[in-house]
Length: 434
Image (cartoon, rainbow, N blue to C red; front, side):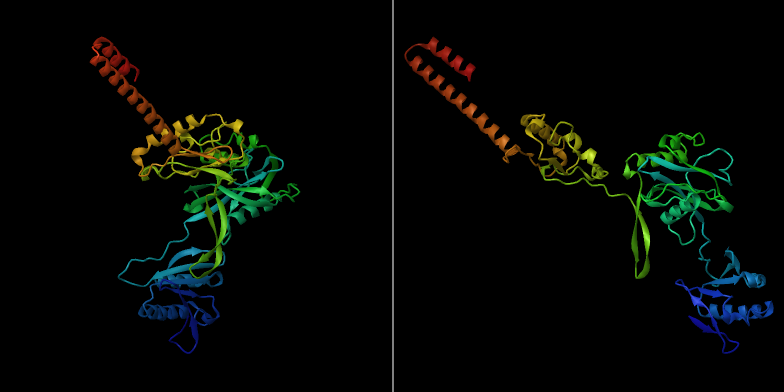
């Protein structure tokens, strides 16, 4: 947005930010006359400040280039303060509302660093370097390549770049295995350090070419050598990061978080990296579904996603049991296993399921009987077992009742024939047997 100054037809550009502030670049060509001397700049800045305040502007961002640094003192006398500086300019700010506290954000509070665990999957080794300068130099310290993330650079790209610059090894980003947040950066800044895993590209020659200005030496080392570092104190943050790197290299790919590029959204162009936990899923083959009881109360309803190992049936069994099914979920059982692999009987399986459901019966609203598919495709359900058992009990009870009735009948007959003693014995035996 362009505004006209009050001292003529010349246009003096400034822009409005999204928060009602004003951004001014003194190096703009339109400021040549106003910024030619400290006197003309002081007069122009006074007029502009009055106008900005009248228009309801709140904060003012004044960018002064290195070649016009003499104007900094003029802006300071007009109430401007330092905000931050780069190689070619200094940014100054002023808060115009007199009855409100300044809401101009402070300068960047953090620096961002990256450390790369470079893993050669083919040869099972890790890339280590020795620094030529800095606090890590001169101590025989072998460490992972590290560096700072440039402005506008993504963490994965920074890690790949640092490794290529320092060692000449071409890599691809895999995951972030840990983040260190400290408050011991340069000049009071806080520090964010991303420990990432990089995989050596298959087509890479793996020949190390060190950056002579920063790296004293570099080498490939075993995972044991990487972990056996006398400079890393056990229990420290470095020890924790090293352990997580080793877990990843050993095959535990869920030890870190992965990155995915997604559109910014909200009508804004571009893409950003989104970091998240990797999705762990179990491959689904043709299977039998074992429906287990209703959910446990909400206090225990949140669990981590089960890994393939934790959700699989116990060794030697093709059936899910209560021990590996603490919540309601569908447990997939491989239907291709032969009958000889079944190590527990149907009765034991149903008993185990019944005990499980009895344990959580008070916590469920629906009681679901277990189901098992037998070899040949026939389905055996707990409902069927229950009904069969019920009919068996009724049959036994019926036979017993008939026997009792016959005993009493014969007793009455014998009693009528004055064989009372024998009748008593028959009644006693009938009750005893039934």
